[in-house]
Image (cartoon, rainbow, N blue to C red):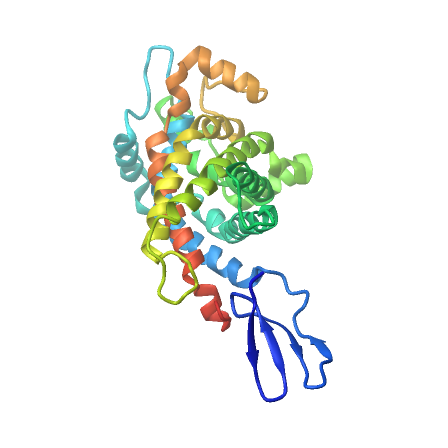
Length: 344
C-alpha cells in the first residue's frame, strides 16, 4: 500500500491513501499502534448511505415495481383472456380501483428492510473486491464476477423475506379484483405484512419467511454477477472528482448505475418471474401451483411460452435503473460520512 509520511515536532505518523491514521512513531522511535486493525471499510456510514439510497429509490419507483409484480403473476385464461393488456393498462386499472395509496401496497416492508439489504449488497461487493484484488493491484473480470456473486449471496438473508411479504401485498389487489369479477369477494380476506408474518411463523416457523430462497438466490446472485463488474467498468469511464480521491463524479455513478441495473435486470428477468410465481401464497381462481423451480420453468414454458419469462421485463428495467442509479450515487456521495463526521 502506498503510504504518506507526515512529520510533526515529536511524532511521525503513517497515513493510508484515504487519510486514515495507521500508526505513529514517537520521538524515541517506539511504535504506538493507533488504528492498526481498523478495517478498510467503515460499516456504519455505508449502512446510512445504502439506507438513504434505498428509501429514496423505493419511494420513487415502487408503483412501477407493483405493476411489474402484477404483470409477472398474471396468467392467461383458457380463452386467452387477461386482466392487464400492458404496463400502462395495469397502472391505469390499479390506480382507478385502489387509488394513489394502493400503488404503494407493500412499500412499508420494502422501506423497512431496504436499509440492511442495500448495505449488505454494496458493502459486501466492496469487501470481496478488496480481498480478491491481486498483489499487483489488478482485479480480473472473473474475480469481479465472483465478488458480485458473493455479494448477491450475502443479501438473500434479508431479500427473501422482504420480497415474500412485498409480493403478497402488491398482488392482493389483483387477486381481489379477479375474485370480484367471479363473484367470490368473501373468499379474499384483507392482509397485512404483520398478519402474513405471524401466519407463516405460526404454521411453518422462521423457515416460512424464506419460501423461494433458492429462486431468490438464483436471481440475486446472477444479477450481481452481471451488475457489479459492468457498473465498475462504466463508472471508470467518466470524469473523476477534483478532490484527489480518484472517485467518479456523482452523475457518472448515477448513469453507470442506471445502465448497469437495467441491463442486468433484463438478463435475469426469467429468474425473477419464476421467483415471483413461487413466492405468491394466494393464487387467483384457476391459477397454477408450482412445486419447485424446475416445475415452474417447465410449466410456464409449456402453458405460456418463452415470452412469459420476460413478463414485466420493461417494468423491471424501469424500476431497477433509477433504484441502482440512486443507490450508487448516494453510496459514493458520502452522505453517511457527512452525517457521522467521518473523513471520506
